[in-house]
Length: 279
Length: 250
Ligand SMILES: Nc1ncnc2c1ncn2[C@@H]1O[C@H](COP(=O)(O)OP(=O)(O)OP(=O)(O)O)[C@@H](O)[C@H]1O
Ligand SMILES: Nc1ncnc2c1ncn2[C@@H]1O[C@H](COP(=O)(O)OP(=O)(O)OP(=O)(O)O)[C@@H](O)[C@H]1O
Ligand SMILES: [Mg+2]
Ligand SMILES: [Mg+2]
Image (cartoon, rainbow over all chains, first blue to last red):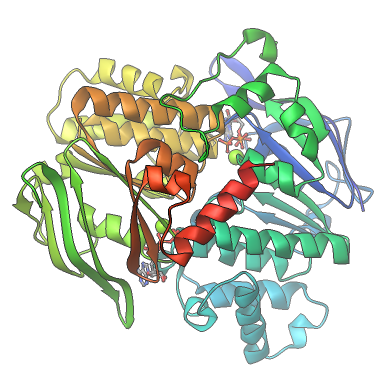
């Protein structure tokens, strides 16, 4: 199971002409944990969403290759894409509350994903599906799965919404999981448990994970490889454990900007962005 | 409560049906100071901010801002003086309003002039390029949306800013810029902050005092210095601190 991206470009029409949001990005993802970090607006979410062909309708996309397990994403039919989305590849979106259906309870949404995509799901009873949903909520460390299953998105805290989204994407047992800032609203204890769960899915079931995150210490601990994006490009790719030894000035600058608990800084250093980085 | 306190909350309780989300929380914040709130997901942090900002009328207890006791009804002036940045930037921004509208609206509502210059400055302060001014929220990246929400909250020159995870959607370079900006504005205008965040390093950077929440209660009140030094008392605080220093130390 491989995802291959070769020379991906994503552009948007603007009154001043085309603006390039992703410029010649290439990535090859196998059964592993790939982290993507980088500048806000550098094209991380767009790159990830292109794999599922879930881009804004006005986006113009070209690539020498964009494939999912040998399927050419650029030429696949809508039916082929539906078979990938949700079932073979899950996307945990950056804004969970916005991505959830506001008029369905959390339990109903997870149950629906479970029924639609599990081999025998369609034949399962309503009660079975709801039970499966509650089990998934417990797996993502929701303390009172019954109550949360019955709650609507606006009745959930930020971190609960994020975990409902994770549960929904794990329900079909995907081969690839794209997680866009999946733990940014979670406290450290819950985050640690969610990462353990994801780790388990990668190592035991051979799932591939693409983790987009601003949390450099987390990515460097958890992932195998990291791609650093800046202004639409991958400017550096390294083994996650080697992040502290990054050489690109943007990556170095990022590491310096981090506030830490151990060393107090009165003022945080900021990046001086060199125009050459995006040239 | 001393006269210097800008915010004083005593025994705040908030209930949703049968769920008591906030079970008697008390804290005070001096004028011009910053108070951090950390703790378990679902422990009631956002609910405290929402009750304080007037978004949730179903509360009991006593809340004061600048010596004035808060009631369920808040004046228009209150909504200028106290601004909130939401955890989910979609909550702060109307999907059919451009960035320009989102930033000019508070100025129009509160009769503040000089709109053009304020918008240009507001965008620059949060490191956003002028090119995004006429875009809609869905045409922005997650971090760009969050910065628009912060710029919007600052537009009407509030005295109290309630920040719910203001930097969790930002890359660390923009996070550093936003944190420095918040410090600068505080030094310049004497703003009072309450900031919720899961990132202990971020909270300790901006806030001298930190409240730790679990299960609807504030289980510990600790200074940033004690937090850094590991002088924690409650097991939840200790656990949160251990996990975040473990990650830092690799
Ligand atoms: N529909 C759209 N129209 C025009 N520009 C867009 C649209 N969607 C995204 N963009 C732009 O494309 C660029 C890349 O966006 P993307 O969401 O991939 O960023 P990101 O790296 O995920 O950033 P963040 O960390 O802030 O979420 C941004 O500059 C954004 O403003
Ligand atoms: N409108 C609502 N209706 C019912 N329950 C609600 C509502 N809003 C919040 N709750 C519940 O109140 C509790 C506290 O939620 P709150 O959003 O304050 O948590 P939080 O500490 O901010 O968590 P997080 O860190 O995950 O954002 C949760 O159990 C949540 O489900
Ligand atoms: Mg993004
Ligand atoms: Mg919250």
